[in-house]
Amino acid sequence: MAPAEQDALALREQLFHERVRECIICTLLFASLYILCHFIITHFKQHTDFAAEHDDEDAAVNRIALGLCTFTLAVALGAVLLLPFSIISNEVLLSFPHNYYIQWLNGSLVHGLWNLVFLFSNLSLVFLMPFAYFFTESEGFAGSKKGIMARVYETSVVLLLLTLLVLGMVWVASAIVGNDVASRQSLYDLWEYYLPYLYSCISLFGVLLLLLCTPFGLSTMFAVTGKLLVKPRLLEDLDEQLSCTRLEEAAVSRRISSGKASCWLNLNVELLREQLFAIRSKRRKLELRQRASPWQRNLGYPLAMLGLLALTGISVLIVCFHVLELLLDDAAMPRGIQDASLGQVSFSIFGSFGAALQVVLILYLMVSSVVGFYNSPLFTRLLPERQDTPLTKIIGNCVSLLVLSSALPVFSRTLGITRFDLLGDFGRFNWLGNFYIVFLYNMGFAVLTTLCLVKRVSWAVQAELIHAFGLHKLPLPVPRSRRLTKPC
Image 1: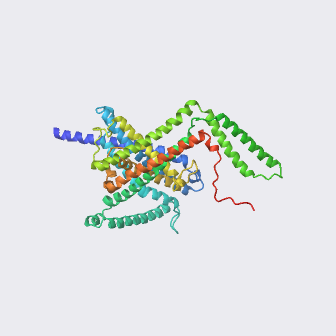
Image 2: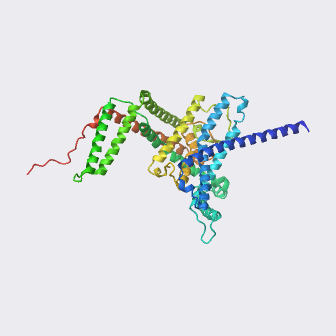
């Protein structure tokens, strides 16, 4: 064999081994996420939906739907970790460029992960989750033989009709928006035009949902932190409050007991019981604060609040700086690249510290958006409950989390949280090149987050000062609505 042929064969063998290695790594990563998501869904699912021993058909349908939901949730978790994994990989390659044990971490692997997440996100949103919902609600066509296949046939027909409806709506919208010859010709290209356009609309909706949920979630996290952690004592006598609460609880208990023993006393027992429950809850909170150590009371709560303030303030400053960049430099626009050139330059001017800060901010904004999503009035009913979440609600949660998580890379790059360019089809969205959309999006996030932050912090400080100085015990003045008339 000639030397040239040997070199070509060695090159093909190397490419083959690299491709096999990437497939094994991707499979192991997705299997780990799938197992983790299976335990999460099992923790929240309702037992009556999945333990129907009297009906094997319904149990099999529920198991199939459970597997599809687990797959979708694993894809959503992978989309959340996609950008942090890419940033950390770049910093690792910069720190250890010639290390033998990290040669598997390259641009081809990262680019393949981005493509897989994009593909599985489209598959889950367009096919798997609608199929799971219609599959659980189907019973088979009238007159057909009952069984799993009858439900599959009915679900397939319904899903096909829904696909034709959605494609028709996208076709009409595309024809209205683009009325030139090139747009008309692209309408007949299903794979290269329809699906990217449809997913672009979904991503735009997800990014707008993140914009609305993140500031509300930040405000909610400040409130939740104040309730979960023990606040420090500020000009208050906790022992006196606890003693008064115990005396009040004993007095209400005696009134309830006397009301049960005497038939001629006109007492509202239900109202007294509600009052007793409220007093007991207040007593438990005071006892918890009294048992807390000085470190937990005087250090835990201030550090947590300062951490939330710091992360939120840094996010707002980065977005404001990115707004100035958008006005001065066109290169600040979010764009996509096809080649993942990792290990060449850091994506932060502060090096590894800046990259770590970017990862923390991305995860922090994702957590705040999820908190804001579940605490918003429109989606509060989707909040899962432990061991009591029906299957339809699980499907709704998986779809919502997938929409939020798949929009997270675009969300982070649009706000300038990271300089890591979007890879693969994530950077092909048409609206990413629109300056007005990107500019207004950054301004909206900065304004909404600042307003929520100022409102929450100012109210919290005002409430603490009023409570510390005992001003909440003062009687409120009663305004005069009309002049007092002289008695007759």
